[in-house]
Length: 284
Image (tube, rainbow, N blue to C red; front, side, top):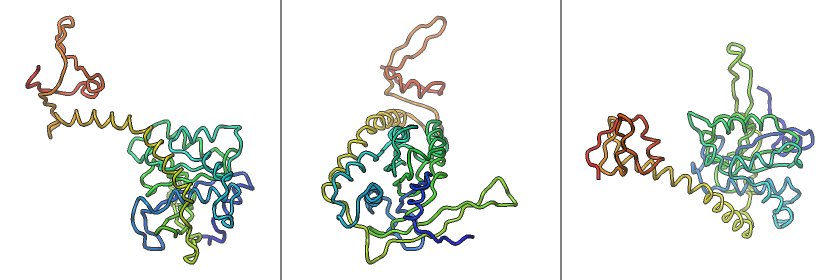
């Protein structure tokens, strides 16, 4: 295995200077070199991503992360859903040194069936170079996000505890016995000095982020709440053997040719129950 001789800053600098793209996941839920707090939330993943973006957009640690003009640039490259990411990567748009996709597990979660739109976005990202040099993904664990996105990650920054992190490079090597199945290897790169932990966000930036994240989550909440409502309705009359039994279905009987059908008042629920076997025990 080749020895890693460059640090993360050098890799990012080369991506910017040589016009290519790297993808960096910032996680907190997996132990590597150091014992972690093993917590998915609250260890500063987004704090670190925003600070790195601040530095990449012209800020400096010497100004204590206080330049408002630089923070405005960071605000403009923050994303919370795949569409926002795609808009920042529009072909021909101004090149960004980095973008941040916060909590991708909320809109592109790991599942056995990955939506075609997410697959297309991942494939599109794999072709990107001119529009972006670096993409940061903040997620508790790489296993939380869709597989096509996981495969794009070149580096993982693991936050062991607030203020401290280590960096690893994800490398792939040819398995000559199985040429179609490359072997993945985790190579240690560097870590933050324990004498200089990364700080908290400035108070005004923390307030901005809290408000921004709440707004983005509110955009997702109605659809989730509706799905949960339908799931709860369905769960109220599902038996363990899969047979559907209910005393609460609302609708009316309708004569259609030779058949008489029961039309539910809730069309979404009706779609979920399509072709399911049901036993109606009480109809009002």
